[in-house]
Image (tube, rainbow, N blue to C red; front, side, top):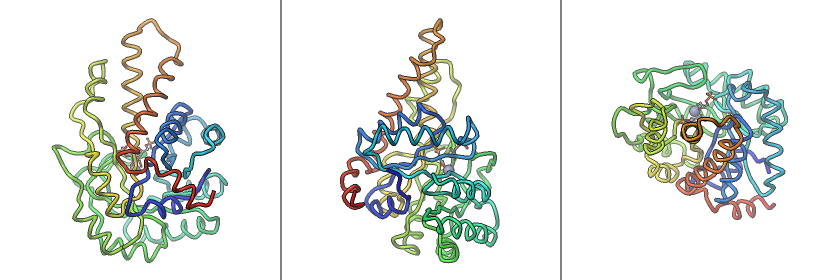
Length: 316
Ligand code: G3H
Ligand code: 13P
Ligand code: ZN
C-alpha cells in the first residue's frame, strides 16, 4: 500500500527512522520489498531523476506497482529524490508518487523558499508530501558536485524560518554527512549538537538525513579482492542511526551501500565463474543479498517490526 511520507513520519517520529532506499531496476525492487517484508518494516522507495531516465520512468513505475501486488502487506511511500522544480511537477502530476523532494539547497535562502513554496502548493493540492533541503551536503548528487569546503551545516534558526515560510512537510538537514562512498577523511561523528538545536527550534517536525550509507569496510575489502579499486572510503557509523532518530530524524537515505552490495556480488561472481555470461544467476544472488542488507538496516533504524502497529494506526 502506497502512503505519504507524512503518514509514515507520524508513526515513526522520535521512536525510529524509516529507511529510504533508492532503486533503479527490478532486481533492486525485489530485494527491497523482500528485505522490508522479512523484517516487517515500512519503507520509502526513492527514485532519482537519473533513475527515472535509466530505462524509462514508466518501466520503474510498472515494476513498483507489480512489487506492491506481489507483496500486498508492504506499506511504503514513493518519493522523488533530489528533484528540481520541473521534475517535482512531473511526479506530482503522475498520479503515482506520494512524496517529492524539492532540492533548491544550492540556491540562496530566499530563492530556495520561493521555489519550495511553489512546489508545496502544487503537491498539497494533490495530497502529496514535500521534503525540502536547507544547508549543503558535500559529495556528488545527480550532476552537482559540492566540494567538501563548500558544504555547510544547516543553521537551526534558518531551519525554523524556512519551515514556517514554505509549509514543507519534512526537512533535509546537513549534519555532517555527504553523498557517496567517501564521506569523511577520518573517523567522524554526526553533528548531534546541530541536530539538537534544530529539534529544539522545530519540535515534532520530521527531519531527514541524506548521505547515510555506512560503506561497510568488509564489503569494500571483498570488492577490492575481486578486482575493484575503491580506496579511502568511509561511511556513517550505523550505531548513530537510532540516536539521530530519537532527535527527530524520521528518514534515513541509503543508496551507496546498495550499490556496493551489487558490485561485490557481481565482481565475485564473474571472478569465480569467468566463463559465465548469463546475468540471471548473479542477479538472483544480488536480490537475496540486497534483501538481507535491507533487513539488517531496518533493524538498526528501529523500523523493523513496526509494520503491524503501522497497519493498525492507519486502520487498514
Ligand atoms: O543522492 C543521490 C542518490 O544517491 C541518487 O543517485 O542520482 O546517481 O541516481 P543518482
Ligand atoms: P548515500 O550516498 O550515503 O547512500 O546517500 C544517499 C542519499 O542521500 C540519496 O538521496
Ligand atoms: Zn541525498
